[in-house]
Image (cartoon, rainbow, N blue to C red; front, side):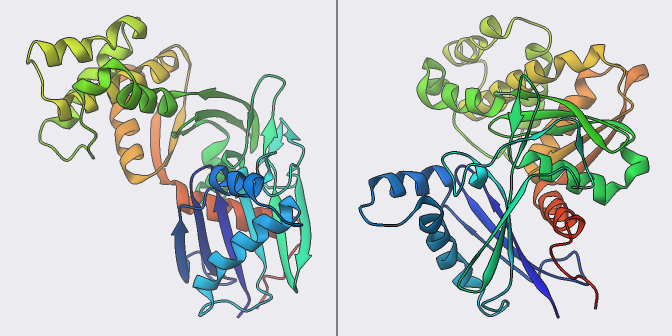
Length: 323
């Protein structure tokens, strides 16, 4: 049985999953906090003769050892995310937009270390924006849902830097970045609003109502004014800190999504963690009028990433997936 390891190497985390040629269900998976940012800091502070790529491969090899029961020493690894950035394993040029979702226009660098082949996928860019990792997720969405579902669609990829990708006829034709997650983190950890919120997973009763109230506020007002409402609610004892956390999150997501009201959208796909998909689907339901709601689909980011990596792997004829 032929296998491949899919590696999603992000800024703050590393995820590995083993797949066989006859299944889209992982045989095994592991996660680590060895993100690109931390590994880069270790590389910069290390003394020794390792090249950047060799240093990152050594870190990856240690994580691969956790999967030894499921892989062989020559099982190939395909990597997407920040590993192809200038703070990662090797800086690769961006593939230009329009970017074909069948993977044929992706930039992929291959190299071999101790008998194992590694395939590094780069990101894509327009003249005004860029992304690394999300293009692989979008390709995976296209593969999972099918071309007919994505002839004309908007893909929302929530995260530290959320992406909105416009898809037409199997091609990314444009995208925009929104710093929603990073601004949210800065506000609830390092601003005066930090005293008015308590991070939580929205399981507290009333959190979803508070979140939707925030979506309504953030999508209908100047966000620089409306977020101070978080402190007002705390000072006047109008909401506890857990509800305020959800309310602040809703405000920022509402501000991110408000422009979608003016677009003639047929299909919106939200791809992220379970919690983020739930939040964004609820926010989309809130901001669109009843007579103007697009069709909305939610998908797992982990599943989409692996599907995109496998698609690109096969499309570049890097691996024999026949039985």
